[in-house]
Length: 71
Image (cartoon, rainbow, N blue to C red; front, top):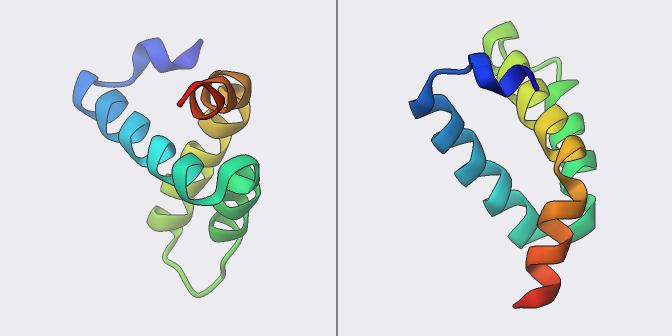
């Protein structure tokens, strides 16, 4: 829902990144992204980025798993 307020270039980039993580980690993608979001060695800006991607990955879990299973 809040994705409507994201700039178009960010939506495209985020979708590309989430797709990459689902392709690489399958159903564990949201978990991997959450781990990165909680990594204290990263800057606050980077953690916010990974937190946003983890949130999108959790919301879109069914969509990505269906796409992976269709291929």
